[in-house]
Length: 547
Image (cartoon, rainbow, N blue to C red; front, side, top):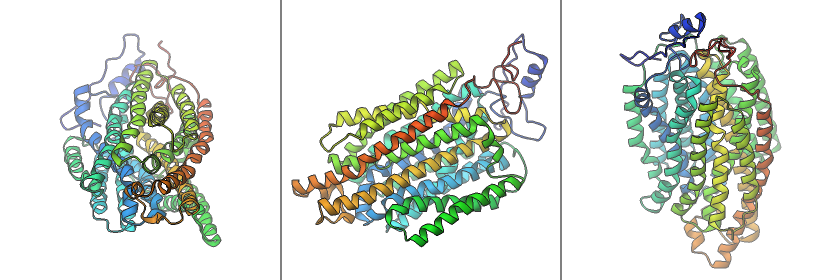
């Protein structure tokens, strides 16, 4: 993918390179015979040019993360004002569900039409959802606005990762991915603080309005800076695949999120049939599609299948925990939204530090399997420790557990993306990135929906038992602070009793992800490839020999 007036610099082949390696290195300067954009496997722009080109996508990624993290600390106040405790889980679930379906669509469209136009549309959709959220008069409106945001956010995440893969060789990709991920971390860092401050001052609606200037900058900057590459392939979008995938995913999410909330047996049966039938139909459609939404052959690759599954399991634990942790800190610990955001910084700090260290380790060694395994063990340890938290636990102890959880997540999150991209052909980097993002978001959905459903159901029961006279649907942190001490203590105990058992239940989920990663073949990044192409970044043949 080449920017206007810019041709990528191609590293000279080593003196001992074979003729095939020399030819492959020279060919990397232009498009392939099919008219595809050059990929990161074959060219490496200068650092200054790369930072400039990726600045706008990084700001869009910052916008996407702000949409998620800003609202976390505002959520207790939002559901209290809009009287929506029973629909609390759908504020996050609606966002993630829409993003999950959008990811493979955006990834495939990026491969078919080029990254730039699809990226710009994603930014615009995210902006539209932010405006709708700022205007929301009811919980139903808010949930719909979050779904619109999710469509844009899902496209942004997968397209930024694919853009990095287009521009950067695989061995250099982890540090660059962590650099772009710094925008993600910045959003996660600022989000809880901004959300808390906005909630306490101008109001939670500004958690949506603040996205507008950032989004406009990302939109204009992306339009000016992103390369105008030609489409990689020409063909129709797999519309039938989109429909069947959406049916299966939506039915499954409704099933797991509403099952504990009292779906009627007939509704459960209907959702189960829709989920299973939609999945079977999707597989049959993809097997016959000319341009499948999710090429099934990618999932037959051992590395892709195991890394994708492990990433989904890590996502279950990660988002099942952090989506509702600010609510726990405010309602159990009695913290203000701002102070709850400060405590969440412990997790973000651990995640950011581990991401940078992991990227450097991968860049220096070329090996990526061990770090996610270590990350799974650290996540499991942190969750086990968090299961023992009580209303009387100190904030220092809670922050320490969150830091450990962040370190575990940081060891695996971006590394798994690089591992999956390395196992796929260059022409399907966008698609395999979207496949990884899709299944990761399925994990996010499962974590958000199941944890939210269990938490909400247990909380309603706990409150009915411990504080039956408290109006749970309109309960905000400020109202809890104004209750008599003994009643406030019972409310805190109800929230703790509803949430802490979830931590223990997530431990085996993360450990299973670690076991799957142990089954991934250990090897150096870029040494082999499904296409049999040389390791162009290193100037070596595909078998990894130096000759």
